[in-house]
Image 1: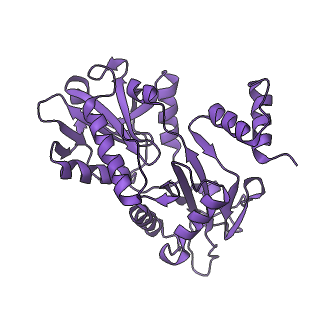
Image 2 (image 1 turned 45 degrees about the vertical axis):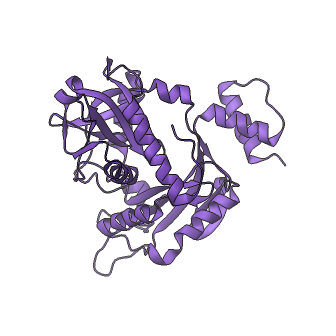
Image 3 (image 1 turned 90 degrees about the vertical axis):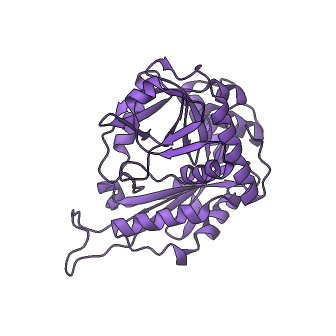
Length: 343
């Protein structure tokens, strides 16, 4: 029987007509697929409503409120060689989001770490340098579509729980040092960005706007302020002699990133930097920033080297960004026991 990896490779080959001749071993097919689809390598076994199953067998009702209304919350958590990093903080954010959306799901009693570890094991990612587990919880699938989710005597659907894991590849050293270009994009998101809901349409459109301009990332802005990226928090190092680091404070206007919180702790503990949690004006971004970067679970630290075609600093990843990434990876090493490469 053809393996799922082989099927995926052949499907990609038929769609893109590349590569024309495919390697035959399972490992070689996996390497081709990784190279074809980029830094994310999604795996085959998923978790749905209490069961592990092949991804192609996972079925969710078209009545699910996550599908009809975007009525759900999600979380993405990193694992290094199968060991979780900052799991408690991620689960607390998930719990906060469920409470805000009033979705009845008890994070503490559902043994999520065990489920994540099972997924990692079933997908043979135990020894992967870095992978991500993703969980999405929606309000469920009532028989009748109704904007209201709770009415006297009304149906109370059971939440839908879906989870998967995928390997995440680091960019090459050369690509990271080259840095990533950015476009300023208006922030069109709703008023509670601090909740990690599945309503990501404005993020998707903003990111696509940046891609359409030939850029790698989007910087969302509102009222003359740079807020964050389309899928990560944004940081700037001011062009001064104090290594002043600026990132937006945790308000309703940004997601309270876990990587962001860890890096703030490490930068303050290190003592070589002045750390300011405050809004960054677009004028400052244009005229008084020598380095910039994004943080998120999937990218850790990602250097930004230009905005709307104008270089930031010398137009390459800077030394302060590199030092901060080293601090972050040393924290991963301390908390997980996994040896990191540093930047």
